[in-house]
Image (cartoon, rainbow, N blue to C red; front, top):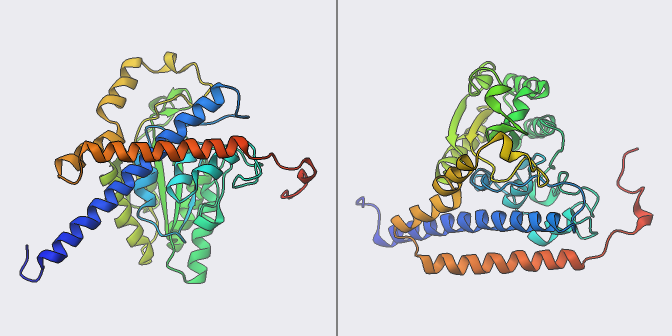
Length: 334
């Protein structure tokens, strides 16, 4: 302890740190349980359309969004449930949107891959690979023109590294020093193909071509994700321009919930290794215990709380009404 730091201040700092990490633990656990329920809803034919589950990648969404303010912007991907929840979306309204109900964030018209929530700065998920890069960069341009200190974050998967729009907007962001962080979630597979078979060269070198600094992060370690995001967000707020985060991670399910082919393009041993040795929720839990910040009794209480909230949210959505068919021509541009 330094001479200027009182015991009371030290205790307060420790309490704040404990509260921060426990909140992130609870948020990751919420995403995990939410996705497990989504999987069951789909497999029991109670959910329309498709769903691309975020299980296994929770540390990235939670770690990055924890470094943002409510008025900061994000754009998401077809695998976007985790981003939406991490940025402040409610479980009950998320379920409602996935089930096509009036109470959903887009009144049931967006579904799993098109959730947006202006109130939390979520400019929307996008079913097009790399499709939200232009939207996020446009938001960052708006920030720059308005003289605000907000920041925009663009989440995308490794498959988007093959999309030209990403490089066009990254070039613009670098030239004009837009306050944006490009977050690549490299879960190793472009749908059903390992990224090394589809993407040439060093992934981290992509942004360097535009003079955009890149930091490669262990996407399963929420402490590393949060630390990196904090630094890059602060840098963007100070007017130093865009940055690129390459987060190495892994999706526990297939490309989408109906993907029964994953047994052919990746092994059970590989899946088991990531789940048992690199699970982001368990890694944080182990560290919290090591630091003496909590014990297994508290984890059990958090588990019970999260499970109850997710089950209540699911039931709310199942009971909610569908939109009136007369609204079919509302909220459209054409």
